[in-house]
Image (tube, rainbow, N blue to C red; front, side, top):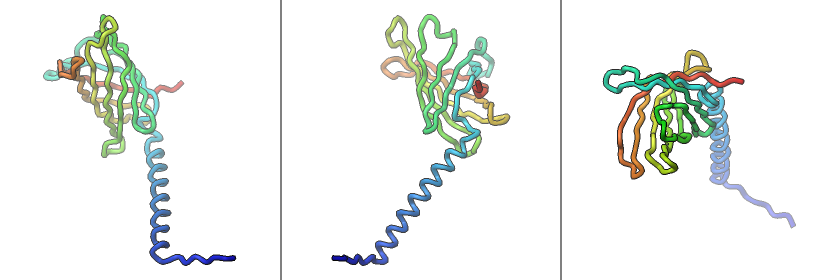
Length: 169
């Protein structure tokens, strides 16, 4: 027995809308990947300089960090800042995203600082990253560094700037 199905114009319109929605999502996803092909995704060697927030004067010698920005908007980082001694600063984990301008990104990371194995404080870094010159360098003209006690109360705030170079083996 052969059964005939009647397709109404409304059903055709819904199917067409679904096909268009799926196709535009695939195009949007592909353009996001292509847009960042020379962007922030990857691992970066970063030189960080702490600054007095009021005067802008450098505080101490620059130190180095490694930042890895993954597809999907996650970031992990580690640092070699001797100013944490004798405390130990763990790796930072966070998120990043595009800003309106194609060559700018925002990133926030959170790290734990321990003393004798106990949580002493947390560190939150918020920064705007500007790509260039070229696809393998960036600058952070101003980053905000906040320290919180284990209960989440703000202890102090600092400022920093950074320059990054893409890690290429």
